[in-house]
Image (tube, rainbow, N blue to C red; front, side, top):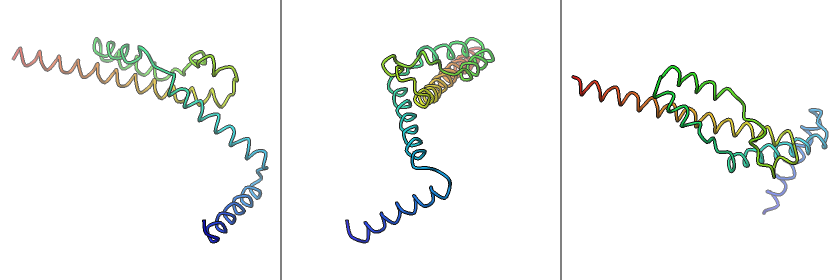
Length: 139
């Protein structure tokens, strides 16, 4: 690293400290916010690794295939319900950090919504394909 680059880095760090000090944040709050962010991101990682929305795609797909309006209603209901804390693996739930739980629930809900809409889309696609096939064979 050249002297110019190290000088720029020092200037950037000083500028950030001055801006944060002028905005009313203390150093403890800055460290705490960074810790909260790490906990939130760790919760998201755990959800990506461990949360599997089992049965969601199948339920919405079958319901949509059988009766399209009921399937769409089921999909919307499933997507509107938050993920329960009981879905967090036991070895990660021990710390009960609210930011970890929030990160886990947000990522798990995102995965659940994706599975629900994919299942609904597949069910609707199969329904339309069956209707078209029946129309062609009748006609």
